[in-house]
Image (cartoon, rainbow over all chains, first blue to last red; front, side, top):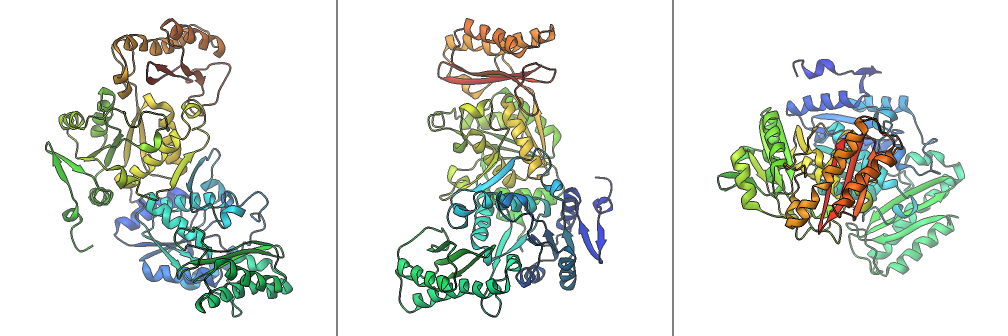
Amino acid sequence: MGLSPLQSIHMTEKDSIKVVDKVNDMQTLSNSVRKGGRIISFVPTMGALHEGHISLIRKAKEKGEFLIVSIFVNPTQFGLNEDYKKYSRDLEGDLKKIKEIGVDVVFLPDVNEIYPDGFETYVEVEELQKPLCGQFRPGHFKGVATIVLKLFNIVKPDIAIFGEKDYQQLIIIQKMVRDLHLEIEIIGLPIIREDDGLALSSRNAYLSKKERKHAKALSEALREITKSFDQGHNEVKDLIQRGRDILNKSLIYDIDYLEIRNGRTLESKEEAQSGDLVAVAAKVGNARLIDNMKL
Amino acid sequence: MGLSPLQSIHMTEKDSIKVVDKVNDMQTLSNSVRKGGRIISFVPTMGALHEGHISLIRKAKEKGEFLIVSIFVNPTQFGLNEDYKKYSRDLEGDLKKIKEIGVDVVFLPDVNEIYPDGFETYVEVEELQKPLCGQFRPGHFKGVATIVLKLFNIVKPDIAIFGEKDYQQLIIIQKMVRDLHLEIEIIGLPIIREDDGLALSSRNAYLSKKERKHAKALSEALREITKSFDQGHNEVKDLIQRGRDILNKSLIYDIDYLEIRNGRTLESKEEAQSGDLVAVAAKVGNARLIDNMKL
């Protein structure tokens, strides 16, 4: 306690960006920033940053007074046969993009720093994690909730920003924050799309040229559903069939789900209402892609 | 943010003890105490305070600069057929005892304040919760870890004090704190015993006069095992049998477990070593009692 806390923080510079890689150093720094009364805003990422992430980081910069971005590919949210090992990594490119925006610190921990031997504590949002991606990626949202809680306890943000692209993740985190009494404002930002409607995703990099063309059917299917709803169709079965037809026309048959659910509780329904979520997950080539829109 | 935070806290006085019953008020108060640089020490209890609790509260007072005691009988740590409803409650007596020690605030929330409708987020320390009481009280330590994490996020202590009587609970909380990067020092204090050796417990109140006499066999069994170990016996099977004999002599046959395990990992073993835990849980009449000692 005698030393000024900042003196003991190990911080490196990568391309003139301040990088912290130890939990203790990050906590010491965040404690000191909070003590100074500055509002910490935070964007947790798994790197491979695209315009979707950039929009989150820019908003975080605008909302807070000290901006922390984390880059950590979290092993506990990947299933055994999923793409943890081959998940896109581009640290150099990420840091370049971050530098252009200007952030205060990048938190870049090692896997062993976050999950040391003997790690065994997990958090689960038991109901919201069940449907949609939860059915097809067992353990995924447990891994997500756990890493986000850990990062929150390390980075100590006042505000944290997530993309609506991972809609189920967003509302799970909002629920966790409320249930565990964390004093953090969670902000969700709209999906950023390519010109043809494809939602930006680090996994789009897995697509071949041909697959990339077919992939735009995901957003087309969602748009067809929202359009039909706007025209007065509200029978869920019928709306979903219209969407599936569009996917199939683009040779997308490996569909994990295409569903309409309550946008807050994720409960399934037979009759669609304004505010409902339309969400899709499907395999296009080797890439499992997700997308969603609100009615 | 304009108002001084303390102006907006709803605090009542019960027998001239400051009582806070809302989560938001407690957080506002704790934020303000922390901002002032004072060390918050915390003792979470389920009330029905006895000398065991008193020793924790006194130590907390000594270690911190602002002392918060919570009283909350936590429903999520009781099984369906357990004693949640009939668990001893004595708020008036508790407050009297607390007043004698002198604490800064009692946090006394309502069940609905802590578990509002739709609550669904739980934390689990997956390995340490399995053996011993975990085998006989499914969900118990999940409820314990969850309420303690919630209380930590509400009370924001620097130091929290628990009794070694609930040894498995203590090391589960220590593990949770480490795994989730909470900056809280967890202190465990020795079991307080009656003159005949019976560990103090709120559940001792369930014992008839006759059962109370038999109940002292729990600590006698543990003592027999530690004594035999000191005399050179280290075969676990043999040591356990000596303990069981003592329990049976006092007509205690309904034994959930009497085990020797590694005191840090709770791993079972065949050969006892110094530092190992000897732990017992048994039914004496309607009371399920636990006790433990270290070799």
